[in-house]
Image (cartoon, rainbow, N blue to C red):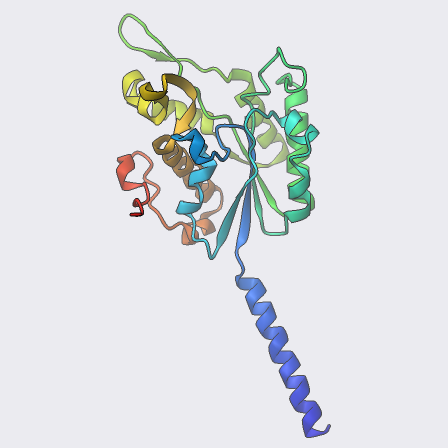
Length: 266
């Protein structure tokens, strides 16, 4: 073989090796689908944040890139019906992860466009997301809905009410039946809220006197940081290999100030 041809082939081979190495080192994506407890908000909605906004700071961006597709007010039904799932069908690839958290709006019996009965319709819609991830070679993870901060004052101690009941159980049952990874955020966040108690838990949710808000469903930044911590911690339990890509401590019961990223001076 002429020397020039050998050199050309060597260059082509080297380029292919470099391309393969770059592809192997490119970050995978973790997609989030869900409702307002996870979704993105602009500065005009401050201090409201979804937990999905605080997921990336826990992950090495060279290993994982967060793609938060959660949409306020959507149920597992309306998210698909309105076309929000379509971009994921194009973007998702083998090796990616899909975090699936619905329930808050599926419970809205008064709205047929969003409501899903917990026994049949809700798990059927959730399976659409699971099937898509599996079809793409990605890993689906089901997440039970974030607990509402709803306390009932008793004679001795305030009782936290379980407002998700059958919907959280439907997610658990589906995960077991279909062998899907589960993050039981309902149970975890209820334990967190019980430990804090009624008054101490208010600053994590949208209790903002300056805005005359007392919202027990949606999170402020500090709440989003803690809930994102729960998600990453439980994800790492499902996939221990993730630990190598976690760049912030996941002792989620630690003071929130130690978990929050430093403020950038302007």
